[in-house]
Image 1 (cartoon, rainbow, N blue to C red):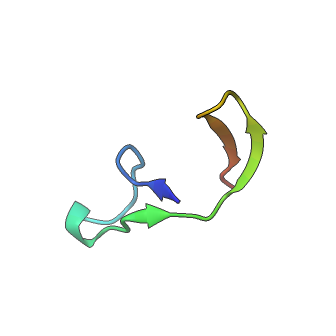
Image 2: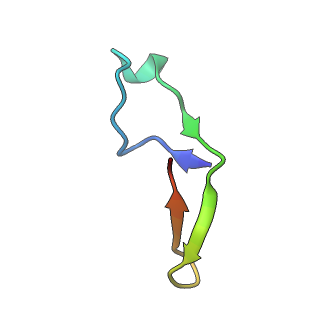
Image 3: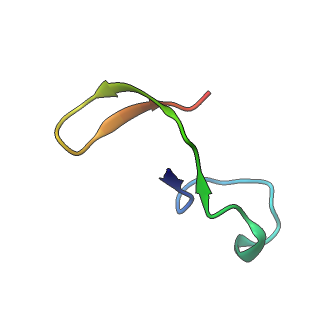
Length: 40
């Protein structure tokens, strides 16, 4: 799951917005703690 902290949506208020997005497909492992995701 991806936390919505830095993702902009069209919802008018943060309280009414989605809290998490996902699941997404992992396309590549960059290092031990970072992954590249296929968002579309």
